[in-house]
Amino acid sequence: MTVTIAPTEDIKSCLALRFEVFVEEQNVPLDEEIDDLDDIATHFLAVDEAGVPVGTARVFEVGETGKIGRVCVVKSQRGTGLGARLIETCLEELRKRPHLKKAKLGAQNHAIGFYERFGFRTMGEVYMDGGIPHTDMVLDL
Image 1 (cartoon, rainbow, N blue to C red):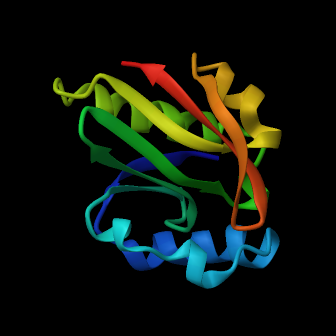
Image 2 (image 1 turned 180 degrees about the vertical axis):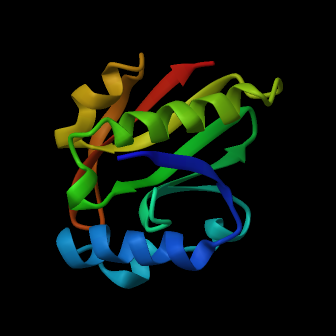
């Protein structure tokens, strides 16, 4: 199955995916999932060949750091490499911005190994976000 990833203004579809994955599957409280960063972020939407949204991610800037977040893939697409393609897309976007020096994300602890494959390294202590243990990770751009 062919999946296309592109920047999008279709925030409604991104939010629907995040609701499905984070709120319904992972029990993240809705008021913690939706934030004001959606207004300033660049959103990416992955759609399958039928035009159905199957994954999303967002990036935004804090000083010289590009933050990657809200990365999610629907169950039917997990294990296909789509999550890796979303991260690669986010990193490509951040690398187009020469003033950014590093990328940062908050990884769910079970996914640390996934992000390490891209060169991210852990920093800081474990913390709870949406009731799920997370660790911050950084990558020099």
